[in-house]
Length: 342
View 1 (cartoon, rainbow, N blue to C red):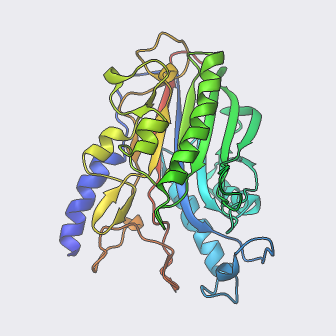
View 2 (cartoon, rainbow, N blue to C red):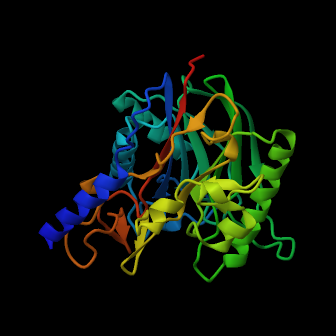
């Protein structure tokens, strides 16, 4: 089993981890997303359901386990192309845990600021954007509420919108964590897609070449209709109509790879989707997506090494058993380039 896992890992890492580009450009930037899988602090928040992640809870979530989790997350993030310039994260309890993560990342020489809003999710899990202030400067932030007009009791994560400057070019970031598949909530993911699509259309009406990066755990694959029919994200550049988005992760998923594994098959829920203004074929100047630079990032230590789940992402917990791992998701990233530096 160990030998077969090693062979699998070599194939996996060979395809995903290294973004190859012979294009020598003046400016490059790594944009990444990572589902941190239940990054909770150890303090009771009476406004959310965090009981299982407390020192006296089912998972015995104390300081040692919390610090272990922070260290694991930081070690992975720091090794993604030397540390992303912009990183979207989800499954975080609050701003404090992201700021704690940023503190740990300083040990790797990485400096991050944080954009975060509390969401109405019942468990309190949110999304956030971490960014290197030397590469990206936000100047506008907004929460997009995912509200079901037919069900006022429905609560889920907001979509985080951040507008800012990178290399003197305006970028629009959206960080997502769409409703889960538990209980069959496809219509809720479609609802999130419609709300996001409406905001994208607003930006495109103001500037048809707006440079938009949509990242997140969509709880759907690139071919599911929430992505293709409602968000209007297509995986083949030659098929794009005006205003449609390009899904950088489509080709990777089509080859059978993904970011999380369920019943022996890979799903690619953690996607990065861009507007046509970032494509090299677009006439707009400035930042561009390096073609085929989308990667799922993995190290051998991030995978279960033996047993029935060999090759699956190594989690922090399996049930209430602490395995001291990382996340049930693998991170993803893309690379932007510009031929000029400002």
